[in-house]
Length: 168
Image (cartoon, rainbow, N blue to C red; front, top):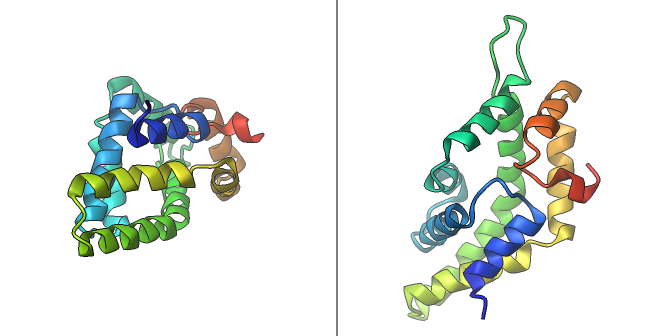
């Protein structure tokens, strides 16, 4: 039987990204569940989530290449594509994170075990990750980028997001 956590990992890899390993996604989901349980706001949680996955050298190289495709006039690399993608992800995912937080707060008020709360986070992530929910997020990321930034993101960051699955 597949656990709710493994189902969420499978959904992330099928619909959103293959950038992270199963182990990294497991750590990220655990960190998110912990942050929700601790009542941390999404913006505070977001940046620590990716760090909790502890990126490999090859993953860091991919991120550097995505940024390097966006050089300014002096030739310095820019993190603009990643910054723009982050802004879209924050804006799009925050309302859902807040809904999860309300559910977990209610569960805590009803004295549910921490493990049950974490399990509910995994269930809610799994339910949220649908093509209908992911498509507008990826479309908005693409539209927020200049053509040069998009080319860099598409070329070097194909593992970051599953663009081709959505015709992008």
